[in-house]
Length: 140
Image (cartoon, rainbow, N blue to C red; front, side):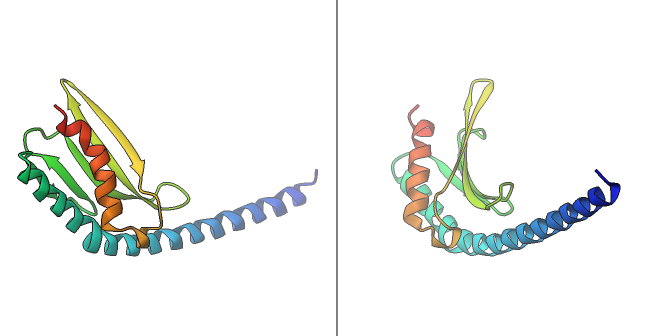
């Protein structure tokens, strides 16, 4: 194989990598804009509503908004929380729910992705997934 052929193929691969990188950055930027709207209009209000309902049932939880996330945290344990954030590590950006539970000296963590396009997620979607992940935190 000729060096000129290898160089030509290499230049093609470099151009393809640049194009893919630019496409990915554009998708992440769009997802970040949609996520910001979702966070303000859907996730934070739904989390506050759930926290109020939990308090009404005798479970002490508080809502925190660290950075570009919303966290439902147990007042009795800093290791017990549910957090909604944007995951941009994959090819397609997605909203993920991170659950953390303290068990003695160890911590049990779990992540799952909210299904659906970011701009189409509703308060019902958020509350449903939070309720599913909340059960281990309140079953003590």
